[in-house]
Length: 381
Image (cartoon, rainbow, N blue to C red; front, side, top):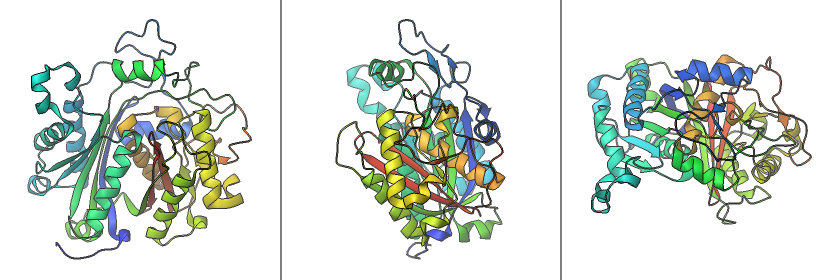
């Protein structure tokens, strides 16, 4: 009901679905993350001759983004138990790099291929209301979309919102990252490790249903997780390089904790951004020390990018879903690819496949070019 103010503890996730290099469903990518089993292999989707790096975490074939988004949204809504009428009232928050067709259409047709137009078309195709927002803000796009959806639900502006995101490894972005020297030449992502050499791209098409707990109870839907808090902050430091002291990401975490009315010691796991870049991982480690102090050296931390790769605009939502599923499973994702300690990354990295948790709360962190930082705080339902 519009005008009814709810607290952030009343925001839940009632449906989730994933496409990744490991196949369809949350189970396959969760299993890979818990076992520390990476999905990187030589790219076959397009030619990589002459590239410095040839690896990515891509599923076989040539999936079409619009088709996969509509399919994955449909499955998430099914898991949430939404009727056709309930879907028809749902807006869509969609995080994408843009309409994949845009670079190759004639100039006089480009106005019809903007990100908002693409998002609206996906919403209608998926049986949603057609009201759609497009988020294109690099790696924080989907975490920003989740935070906006949670805020609208918490304030009584919407009962439920579908948040979806998609990135499929393609030649243009692969070439940009390879030319910039950002991709790991050894074919592995090694977050927070000595000898880490950069990121690798990965497929992800994901969707969640964000809903008020009251609406979920009325439908007798079973929540998958609670969205207990969220925070966003900017560095205003550099267009590409992170602020070395991690101050912006620390503010985002502080805001998420304050919104959830929790203390740092209540957090039992951090799903880090952990791209595997030397500067980025060191700055994120500094941010965790600003928030958790010396406890950061024992706090369980891992980056699931070490398994599924960096899915750009879709990555944060994929990582949030894996984080939620790990809490439910009571096991922690492994920080794969680890070679040895780095003095700039003094964290309690999860290196044991048998690592278990009984914690009710976890943080999922994301940073992006331009100094954007987000923190999503999730809890068991």
